[in-house]
Length: 347
Length: 290
Image (tube, rainbow over all chains, first blue to last red; front, side):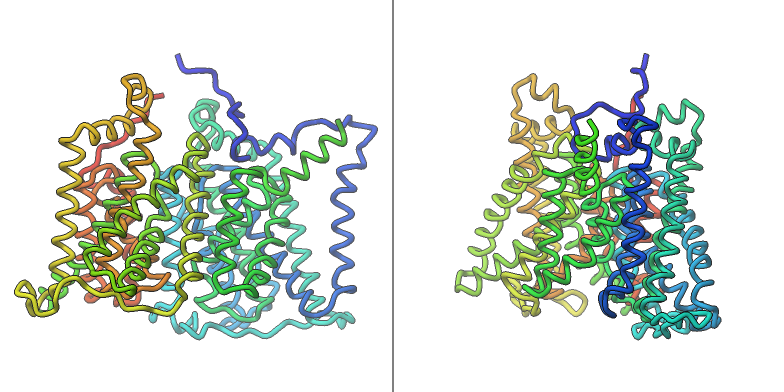
């Protein structure tokens, strides 16, 4: 007689992947009286984000655009690793595929930049699904290992000489920065930021809806207890491969946004360090949270470059210490910490 | 034909290095059921210790011995300080900690010793009798050292009470504890041994690939592939797998895809093994009772 299936195990709260949904779904707020609270929590940052490019200067706007691209990519990794429990150390590869897809479409097919985003996403969806199929046989550490190899091999594959006609080999591809359309009085940086913001908002809304639907329940059920999920009629194989595809699509869209913002793609931008950065991003932001993607993106955008000023080895050292520190001290990440404060205030 | 033989034998030589790293991975897997992502970087760090000692004028074999002992202590210390606290944590936490360790050792080496590439001496004289046109004395020596280490480990695990206790602690921690095996100490010992074996591998590979903080990046992936081909729970299989990967990498690299795609060969090998035969050539199929 097997033990009763528990969708959320009652283990010690080690990593929030055990129980990351608790803060998001626990109905602490009485329905009617405080119903404006969650909306306000969303509206205020959104207003600030809209106002940002009119306050900040050129380079800072570019960095903010990069934060948005990282946030979309981190959300993708978090859907896979945080919600579905499949560990990927190779999402830098899908970020690279998205970036290259966008760059090649603009460079070779002279496609408008905005149209490359869905195509790059679709491309990564297929690539992710195809990688996800054999990955079904792997669990936990083995999957981490296979995706790790993917991360290490990515720059080599991008440099491959028979693909050079498209990828530009070691030199990579240089792109033009798009102008604001309809004669809007915006600088290129401002326009690109607002464009990325729009894409990001759409992607986050879609992710939230996906994860709060029945499909989302199935996705987390597979993470928490695959056997029980299967017994309840969830098709684990189908879901796991599809989630891999969707996750790769998000990361690819992030990569495409970054390619347009940086106006340049080259193999050496997509090393193992990028994949590790993405892992650091979800651990810092909060595994299994949606908002965590933003905190993680801010972290991987600004902390390594700040640390680089101290020493060439410092960004890695900071990453290593932060990874271990967060697992030991703050397993819920920044999002978990904020949620805890919010719940305490409401309680 | 001669060129083929040459590629084959030099593949065997690099395979020896992968084999010793694969062996270290399997050691940790056997004693903890974890795959240590930091193994390569720890070995790299050990090699720097050896380099430091040799630079200070210590004779090679003395430095070799001291490094092995220090690496043993380092491995045991890492287990005690970082791995033990996450013993019961979910897999993701463990992976994150391993990646953290990897990154820390990498940056520590770069910070302490710099990123310039350094030469590392070989203990085998370049005109020794066992050298030939096909294999340099160092390549032959590296293979001999790998096989010797493997034999020693086999004897240790098979015939000593301590080896038996270590295997028991990994296979069934609860029962082992009941019969008086100190499981925690056995795990620490396993990490120490893996650190020592990794250090030997690092000192053997350094004269070939030269010493720098990035030296183990590729080696680790090949060693993973080797360990998987042989079966992640079988030390002899890991050594065999390491040699197979070394030969395949060299042959496929020089005849099929070209040297710049060598790492992708490892990726393909990993994926193919995991799809076709996840337990490897000599490993046991893991059956989970539900």
